[in-house]
Every structure is written in C-alpha cells, then in structure tokens.
Amino acid sequence: MRIRTLSEYQVAYKKSVETPELFWDEIASNFQWKKKWDKTLDWNFTEPNVKWFVNGKLNITENCIDTHLETQPDKIAIIWEPNEIGEEFKTFTYRQLYHEVCTMANVLKNLGVKKGDRVCIYLPMIPELAFAVLACARIGAVHSVVFAGFSSSAIADRLIDAKAEFIITSDGMSRGPKAMNIKEIVDGALDKVDFIKKILVINRMNSIVNMVAERDVWYHDANQGVSDECPAEEMDSEDMLFILYTSGSTGKPKGVVHTCGGYMVYSAYTFANVFQYEPDEIHWCTADIGWVTGHSYIIYGPLANGATTLMFEGIPTYPEVDRFWSVCDKHQVNIFYTAPTAIRSLMAYGAEPVDKHNLSSLKKLGSVGEPINEEAYHWFERHVGKGRCPVVDTWWQTETGGIMITTMAGVTESPASFAGYPMPGIQPSLVTPEGKPIEGNDVEGYLCIDYPWPSVLRTTYGDHERCRINYFATYQNKYFTGDGVYRDKDGRYRIIGRVDDVINVSGHRFGTAEIENAIDENPAVIETAVVGYPHDIKGQGIYAFVILESHAEASDDTKKSIIDTLVKEIGPIAKPDKIQFVPGLPKTRSGKIMRRILRKIAEGDTANLGDITTLIDPSIVDLIRIAAI
Ligand code: WTA
Image (tube, rainbow, N blue to C red):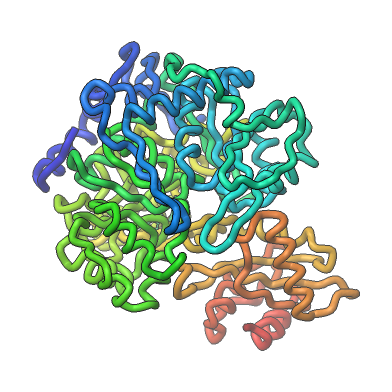
C-alpha cells in the first residue's frame, strides 16, 4: 500500500489505470473486514451508480481503533490542545479512545439512536467531537457534522434536509477570545424543526443552559453506569457513513454522502502516501472537523493508520499570533497540514513569531482548501519548514472524500502553486466549457475525472437527481469538479480556481445563489448579485451588488443590517467584504444576470468589460462601474 519512490509511484499509477480493480483489491485487503467483498467495483457515471467492495462487510471504527488495541494500545491516538493556554492539554491512547467511543456509542443507543439514523453533530473542537463521530460510526448511525459557526437557520436547513432526529452539541464553546452559548444556537434552529427526539449536551463551559425535560440530556448524566464496551455494528461497504453539507452553484447546500468501505480505504491510503506517514509521527491538521478535511485527515485517515492526530480547539492568532508555532513546538508536531489563508494571514506578522519557536520536529508540510500563491508557498517552505520539509499542495473536494491531485512528500515534486500529479487511481481529464476533450500537455481546461475512485460521493442526500445534474450530467461519463486547471508539459496540474458560481472564501465554499438568497431575506433588499473577487488574505472575498427597496436608505446602517441578515441566515463566515448599492443589475433579455461583468467590476478591471450589447439596459453598467468600491 505504501509508495516510497518516484518509480514506485509510476508503477502504482500505471497499475491503477490499467487494472483498477486489482489495484484497489490489493489495497483494500490491508484492512479488517467482517466479510470480504464479492466484487470490487460496479459503476456507471450516467445514473450515477458507484459501488465499491460490493457486499463487503466492515465497521470503520474497528479499523480506526480496535485493530490498534492488539499492537499499540498505549500509543496516543489523539492529542487535544485547548483554546486557552492556561488549560491543560489532554491525550487519549488507543485504549482510552476505544472506551470513550464505546461509552458514547452506548449512550446514543440508550437514547434510541439506531443504525441508519442521522445524527447532527454541532460541537466545538473538543475530544467529544471525535468521540461522537466515531460513536455514530460504531453503531451504524450516519453523522452529519455541522461546523459550529453556522447559524440557527443554517442548522435548521441541514436538520430538515437530513431528517436528523438527534443532535449532539455542547453548552458552549470558546474559539479565540470569543465565547458562545451554542446550545442556544441549536435551540434557535428548533423553531422550524419539530421532529427532534433527543439532544445530547456535552458540558464544556459549565454554563447555564436551557434544558428541555425528556428531550435534552447532559452527557455526563447519560454516561453514568454505561458500559465502555460496545460491539461494532456490521456495515455494508455501501452503507452510509456520513453526510456533509457543502455549497454548490445552485440552491441550498447539498448533503454529500460518503459510504463506509470506499471512504475508509481511500482516506487511509491517501493519508499514508501523501504525507508519507511513519509510525510515531505526530500529525496536525488544523482544519475543523466541521469540514471534510477534518473528517478525512484529523479522524479517519490518521486513525486508520494508527497515527497520533492532534486536535486544536482554538485559532492561529490567540492568545498571540504565534499560537500555531507554539503548538508545533509544544507537541513536537511532525506533519503540519493547514490552509493558504492561515499562512497568508500569519505571514503578515513576519518571521519573528515563527522563529521564536523550535520547529525542528517538523518534517512535512501540507496545504489544502484553495490555491496557494507562490509567495505564501515559499514563506511556508522557508520560514516554517526551514527549507528542509517538503510541502504538499493537496487538491480535493468534499465530494471526492480524499486527496486527488498532489505531490507526495519527498516522493514526487512540483513547483510552487502546482498541486502536482494525480494520486494512483485518479484519472483526470480536461475539457473545454462545451465538453470537447483537451488532450496533451501545456493546456488549460475544465477539470473532470473519468473513472471512479473508492471515495467518490455516492449521492446527495434525499435527492439523487441533484447529484447527477451537478456532477455527472455536465459532461458525459465524467465527474465534473467545477475547477479550472492547467496541465504543464510534464503532466502536473495547477488548479486555477472555480469555474462555476462557487466562491472560495478562506477555504470555505459558498454558492453565490446561497448568499444572494440570504441577503434577499432583508426587508430593505429587492435583489442581489454576488460575485467573488481576489482578496490578499482570504483568496476570494464576497462582493455583493444590492438593489434596495425605494423606502430604504443607501447607508452604512443598511449595510450593517444586510450583514446581520447574512450572519443570521448562514453564519459569521459568510460576511460580505463589500456591499455596493446599485440602481439595477446587468441582465440579458432572458433575465439572466451577466456575472462576468460584475466579476470584472469587482476585480477593478473595468476598462475591459467585453460585449455588453446583449443587455436589456447597457447604461446600467456605467452606473455600477462609476460607483464601484
Ligand atoms: C478548492 C476542501 C487549489 C477547489 C478539501 C475545490 C483547492 C474546492 C485546493 C473544494 C488546492 C481545494 N488547490 N484549490 N490544493 N484544495 N481547493 O469541498 O476549488 O471545501 O473545488 O474541499 O476547494 O472545497 P471543499
């Protein structure tokens, strides 16, 4: 399963393309299955219908926990670093993790959670978040983690879509200098949701919260006298493991579905190879478990490899801007995997906060979530890695479940700003916007994947047609990523960015329609058009063009109220960077907003707006342009 040299990579890649089933068969055989699969792969990209390791039976937690009890029960599985430096960090060995997960699994069972039930998890980055995810997997419940930064309204949408009757949350959380009562946020979601059976509440802050009798249960009460052994439910390879909501170019966020067998194999395989994980290495992925990166590379990938994984509750700049580096030093981190936004924002403070700490334990660095610009890449490599750590720029998506295009640390190499080569098993192809194949090298196009890999999304929860239309219908027999890409003369890939109406703000995905719909909820607003524009720190910023009702004033107060609406509808992460009040929007005769023009205006490139003659009212463009921020 391990690739250690460039030539091994080449051999593995060739084999994965020529005999994909044999290739994955061998890799999957390294895991613990309750029953072996009958057939490695069944697939078509038209319905789509993809099944890996057909009729295989397993439980992912046996592979993430139980297996290691035989070989390394006392090895630390999770290191937890709290938000406050004054608070003690915690560690959990594989044996302790086993008992924590089994206890929570039994508590969930006692609350009535059954195999196949959806459980919404809305928690800060505390150890119980990892336990909760694994406890669900242990009993075959489907976890749907919602990032604890989304608003009540966003939680309600996700609860309704997933028909989740159970919630796991906490009394509160602190992230950086801010403390929040998140139970209240969950309660706020329940105005619109009347089918919640139980809410399990973790005590993190000792705060006083509203507990509804019969429905709300403290975890520290519910776990009294509960066994810390819980047999692992037998799951089919294709049973759902989790739902994770992500934004697309249309409508509300959709619930991407991953299943047990394929996701396990691919997240574990990529973790081992991309980071060239060695036993005893300490791996720190700074993502939140509310995002796919946290699922695959804080929890499942590292634990399936028996690694030590670090979870951090706080933010990079609290209490000081050197927190990341002080944590690396304190816990002797070997693999450090973070996002370009974090690097760019920390770069602004110079090298001094980094140099204060001993970072000699670092061996490998990684980047994920958005394109990394050369300056950030070099700063990361030079100041954090001291020029001796390979940097892997890993391209992938919520829908892909694991890393797809990347270099592997010390095995393959790519210039800065290039993700690099496809992982074994990944068959990328380029097409023109119209779908014409683009062959050869030194070419640019829309990125598709031509063949299934074990952790490709299986569906979007409750709406398979939406999955087909979004990912498999744009180009026949291809999974369409939504990203534009350049392939250089050596076959390496450089991700250019989204080519659809998805904006990537600090590595967080938003659909323009999602933000527009939220802004339109404000009573002062008639219509909105949102585009992304280049932002030095965030990668992309949100620029909103807003038409106001005649009674509304084009004032800072109205802007503030629009921001408040967004925070209420989606959460603070969706705050727009710029709001411009406009008398109208550039629309074609069929009523479509010409975003291309708005994008140019937002970028400040107003000299070259292209053809605007197809607009109903071309004069509106000048009015918007002159007043652009
Ligand atoms: C972008 C995060 C360039 C891309 C794992 C993709 C990247 C979207 C990279 C998925 C990278 C992610 N280089 N762009 N290394 N990694 N992206 O679903 O546009 O939150 O489509 O998954 O982020 O975001 P998601």
